[in-house]
Amino acid sequence: MLTKRIIPCLDVKDGRVVKGTHFIDIKDAGDPVELAEYYDKEGADELVFLDITASLEKRKTIIELVEKTASKVFIPFTVGGGIGSIEEIKEILRAGADKVSINTQAVRNPSLVREASRVFGSQCIVIAIDAKWDEDMNGWRVYINGGTKPTNLEAVAWAKEVERLGAGEILLTSIDTDGTQEGYDIKLTRAVAEVVNIPVIASGGAGRLEHIRDVLKDGKASAALIASLLHYKKHTIREIKEYLKKEGIPVRL
Amino acid sequence: MITIIDYGAGNLFSVRKALEYFDAKVIVSDNPTDILKAEGLVLPGVGAFGWGMNLLEEKKLCRAIREAVDKGTPLLGVCLGLQLLFEESEESPNVRGLGIINGKVRKLQTSLPLPHIGWNQVKILRDTPIFKGIKTESFFYFVHSYYGEPIDEELVCGETNYGITFPSAICQNNIFAVQFHPEKSGKEGLKIYKNFLGIIYGDNTSY
Image (tube, each protein chain N blue to C red):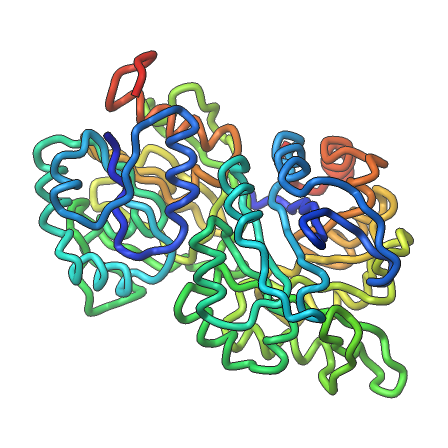
C-alpha cells in the first residue's frame, strides 16, 4: 500500500534554514545539509528545500547545496524558489535534485509547466500554490512572489489547470495558516485534493500531531509538509509516524 | 569498474553517489567502449520510453549494451532503465526497446492517481542475490506510470500493489531490474546497490 508521506521542509535563505511566520519575521534554525542528513536517518520520506526569498530577489537557486545534499542524502528531494526556465530546471535536476517546485513563474508563464513536464516528465514537476481565503472571490486567492503579490487566480481552479498542463504534484500552502502552528487549512486542502488526480502536499500550520492526522484524513492530502514542529524538535518524525499508524494512516516505519 | 550508462536521462548523480557510498569505482559514460569493458552496468533513467530509446540509439549504445549483457556483464536497470530492457511500451507505441527481456511495458490500469509516486512495499517472490538482507514488504520509493511485464512470469522476483499488482523487480540471469529507485529509498535502497556490487565482485571485497 502506498504510504502517506511526511516531508520536512527546509526554508533556506543565505545557505541557512529559516522559518518565517506568515512569510515574514524569520528565525534561524540550522544548517540545511546537516538537517537533511538528520531527517533522512530519522525516517523522513522526502525533503523539500525552498529558497523563500528567491522570487523576491530574483536569485538563482542553490546548486551547491543541491550537490552537497545529493551526496549525503538517499531519499527524494525537491528544490524550489525562483525557478523560471527549462535550463534552470535541468541544472537543478542534474545537480541531484529529484523534483523542482515552480510557483511564481508557473503563474506568469503557464506554458513553462507544459514544456517542463514534457521535457523532464510530470513526476519531477511540482507546482507550488500559495493561497489565502478571499471573501470577494468567495474562494482562495493565489499569491505569488513568496506570498506577497495577489493574482486573479482562484486556487482550486488553478490547481486543476496545472494538472492539465502536466504538473506531477501540487504543493499547497495556506497563507492563512502558515506559521501559526494551529493546524493545516483542511478546507483548502480538501477542496484542491478532491478536484485533482495528482498528489497534494499540504503545507502551513502543523503544530500538533492531530493536525497532521487531520490533513491526511479529512484534508485528503497525500503528504504533509512540516517545518517548525520538526526543526525545533517538538516532535520527531518517528513519533509522528507512530502516532499516524496508531490512527490507521499508512506510513513507512 | 562500474559504468553508469549516460544517455542523457536525468538523475545519474544520485545513482553514482549510492555506488560510491560503498567505495565502488564508477564512471558515467556515453561511450560504447566503457560499456563493453565495464565489470558492471547500471542503466538508470527517468522519463518517457520513446525519448529514452531515441537517445540510446542516437548515441549508438544499444548494440554495446546487448553485447555486454550477452557476455555476462551484470546489469542493473532502474525505473525507465528497467522499461528500456523490454521489447516495446504502451507509452511509445512505435518505438522498439532493447528487447533484452521478452515482454511489454504497460500503463498502470488503476483508478488511483498517476504517476504512482511515493513509498510502496515490495513483496519478494523468490530468493535472489539482489534482495539479500532485505525483508519482504520493505518500502521503496516509486515514481512511474508504466511497468514492465515479462512474458516469462518466472522472471518476476518482486511485486507491488498500487490498485493492481505489478512486477516491481525482475531478474533474468545477469540482469537485475527494479521499477523503484533504490538510490532514493534510504537504507533499504542502498542495500540493493551493495548487493549488486556483491554480485559483481563477491561479498566482502573492495570494489
